[in-house]
Length: 323
Image (cartoon, rainbow, N blue to C red; front, side, top):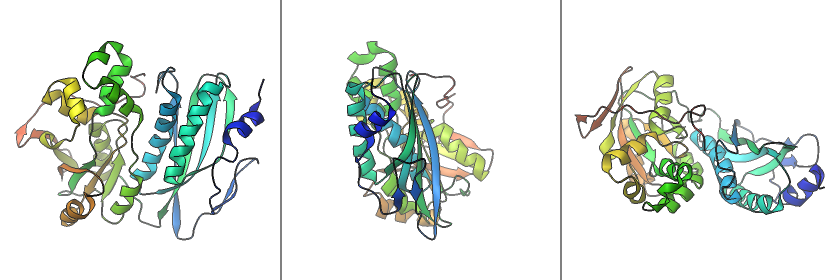
């Protein structure tokens, strides 16, 4: 029976080129790293549990992408450049047919974003994947949730709602006959962290967050920390043609865009004097949509091009949902 050190040798050793700021990585009790001068280190930890965050039958390469992408998205939300990570992996058994594609996809995505695995832990038990990621952000420039001001424009990247539609398919196989069901299921796992785009927002955006629990829920974190309100024009919410065809009507598509969790797009606010710059200079590199503006504290209004809408909606809750 292979042991922990056999596992490290088989799946983790010599998978990545050593970053210049890593003095010592895998193989000792601790890693040793050298952070750059005049930078701050951003850290985030996230856990995916088999049977809760993904079905145990899900393709391992999709699970690997989702696990790492969700953590990279946290760094993006702060405007941090990924650097190092540690992985705590709990496995029911050492299954070559699962581990090989998992780590092939994991390291492929890690190399795309320049982040190096420098340590972690393995243990036996129900499948669980915990990652701690670390990145650099220039001193005093991190994107926070607390800087939004009344009048700021509210933007989101990409399109929203695909992950919720994909989750519908995962939880209810009878929906596989609906349009684009298989594509939406795949998109549920394969998000694109907006790491590079977030660098463009440093010094421009007044607040930012990544969309993990749904746009409506996550935007309220900005509103709470910034002590402001918001007016959202649901007619400006971006969603894919595939998701619209899957749900079958515009109202539901818009509601999915507002509440879909695990999107890992960015929601951010921009002072009005920078809005034209953002739309002119930044929209070319990443799809952007202005969906509303910051309002006085206590106000959260959904409207359709000026006509009020009354939808009782909520985001994803980890203690009320399972996958």
